[in-house]
Image (tube, rainbow, N blue to C red; front, top):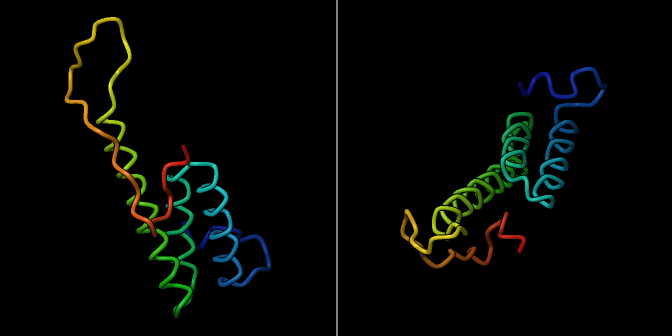
Length: 106
C-alpha cells in the first residue's frame, strides 16, 4: 500500500511520508483516529529511517492508544433509553494521559 501512495507524483519517498503525516494530522484534528493511525503507519513505511521514523511510530502508538481509550469509554457510558436499567456496567470516563495524542475532543 505504501508504495502506491502518491506513486504517480514526482515526490521522493521522504516527501510522500511528509504528505501522509500531514494527512494524519488533519484526520486527527477531525477526530478520525482510525484514518490518522493508518496514515501514520503509511508514513512510517515510506520514511527511510532516523529520528522522523521514530517520531512517526511514536505518534502512531499514541493515536492507537487514543482509539483504544475511546472504545473503552464508549463501553463505559450509559445508553439513553426509557428504562433506567443498563445492560452493562456504567463507569466513569477514562481521561487521556497528558502527553498522549488523540485525546477526547470534547
